[in-house]
Structure formats: structure tokens, C-alpha cells
Length: 195
Image (cartoon, rainbow, N blue to C red; front, side, top):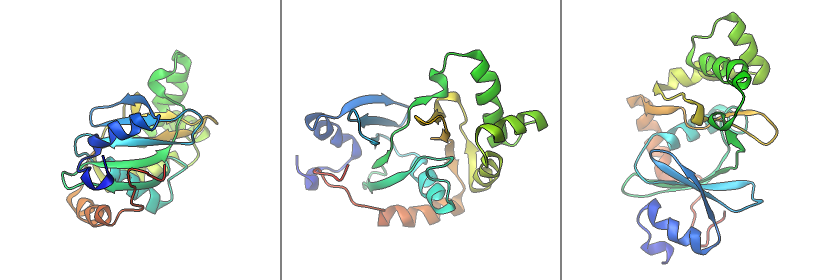
């Protein structure tokens, strides 16, 4: 399958499999593939969603590599799907066992991002992830509807918090701006790829 014959992100799954990538998991709209020891993963979008808008916004706002994942490149398709090269993260909050972690880390961070943390939770969230409250304020200003559950917040190997996929819809003004950026791509990937 040449890169010219690939017309949707989902068609890349066979290419990744043949090149030794492993299926790491999936959410409602995308699957993630990676190779052991690599610092990046490939996100394959199966149905159009707003994740790429979020990733572009976070990169422009200086949150990439801090509160949001680093986006190294992407390719969009006519059907609205995309593939993206993204930093590899360690685990979701949903994979953490400890109820103390949930109480003292996940809940305050989620509430700070959502804008409804009390003073104590805000202090806990800021101690765990400096700047998370400002990030949440900016995020709520740019996107209409957030999807903040424990599988959309992850930890890096160093323990830092990364909000991976908090958006379920964007404002129409942002969507128009992001759509123009989507068509330009940050870096075109081919079947040989740069991943």
C-alpha cells in the first residue's frame, strides 16, 4: 500500500503492523500504536473528532510538553480523519490503583481544569502540576465542551501530568481557525513515515 493509495487514517493500521508497531489501546475515536523504546506513538483517528484542534491550540499556546502532549507531526485526510505523531506517555489516571492517588491527585487536577476546585483542591492541583489552573482557564475559553475523565489525563514517565484529550467539541470560531491550520499540516507523513 503506497502513501498515495491511503485515503483514511484507518488504512495506516496495516502499514504500522507490518512495520513492527504494536497496538497500545484505543478510545472512542482513535487508536494508538507504538514501538517499544520509542519516545513517540502514532495516533490513528478512526472518526473525525476535535483532538487535533486541541493539540494545535495547545502547541500555539505553549502548553505542549507541559500540560498537553507534544505533537510532532500529522496528516489529515479528506474524510476528516488524521494520523499524528505524539509523545509517548506512561499511564492514564484510570490505570492507577491507589484511592489516595485518585483523592489527592486526579480529583483536584480535574476540578482545577474544570474551574470548580475549592481552595484546597486548587493548591493540591498546582503542587502536582504548576500552571494547571491557568491551563484550565485558557482551555475553557477556547473549547465549548470538556470531556474530563480519568483516561483523558495521563502521567509521563517522570510523573508529570498531561491532559491528553479533554475536548469533546470546539467553538465555531476556533473550529474555523483550526480547520485552516489542519489543511496546512505541521509535517506531512508518508507510508515510510518520519515516526
